Image 1 (cartoon, rainbow, N blue to C red):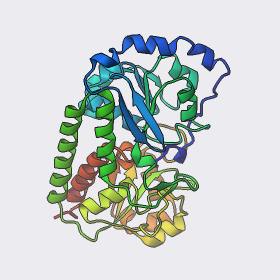
Image 2 (cartoon, one colour; image 1 turned 90 degrees about the vertical axis):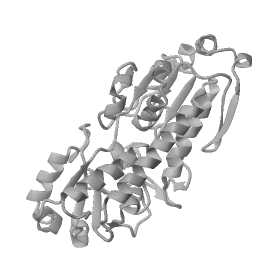
Image 3 (cartoon, one colour; image 1 turned 60 degrees about the vertical axis):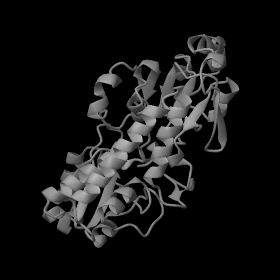
Length: 346
């Protein structure tokens, strides 16, 4: 799921006492940040998903509300300036594990508005618009009322239509939106040089993975979660980037819905050669872990007749790799390696 609406997480109730809780938050946040007049290049203002984001000085108390944006901030070397993280589907990227240990995890799912405010943030970031919604932590306007700047990943607003479920892509998601997020968070935090290095490394990884396999025309299906009414990737989200990088043919590339729920009879009729299976560590609905998914596929009378199931042509991917984020790049590498192991990438 590109958004956490694919799996209902516990939305936070916003208590009436929230504003009182932040009564001294603005002042406290200001004293923890360098004086704006003393910091070169600040204040910074960016247009972001229909809002303007302004920071007067490099933020010193950042709260990240989703795993994707957390991993960007950690990649920028900002662990010591992060007050908390939340909403996880997978283990942290191994290269960021030690840095992540320094950061408080406010909640495994959506934290409450008051729990975020308790960290006295001077910047709040999110990967999904649903996090900044009434059913999530809180709308961005609630933070704006309290002079707390917010930033939303461009991948969840640019070229995206919020229709139903996870929305539909009016234009294809590309890694340029991930690179934009990294560069913009670098600008907002005063780490632009590091952001450029991170983007350059990701681009090198994509090129290496794409050059390592020759799997043009191999048909594939991406299953994120839910065995009862499965979320299957459409054409144009993060799995679309993986497919294009490796020359794969997504059997459901005829829908622009990012993660439509599709019946198993229709899935089986498309009969893909390879199944990319989300291996989620959370446990909020049926079919979260890869093993549970495989057990279902091999026992269900409809799916067990699929060629990919009979031949056990499975590639396991983390949920983070199947979401629009820097982990999408690692998803390209992972699927490339999986294809080679299956003998389909040579």
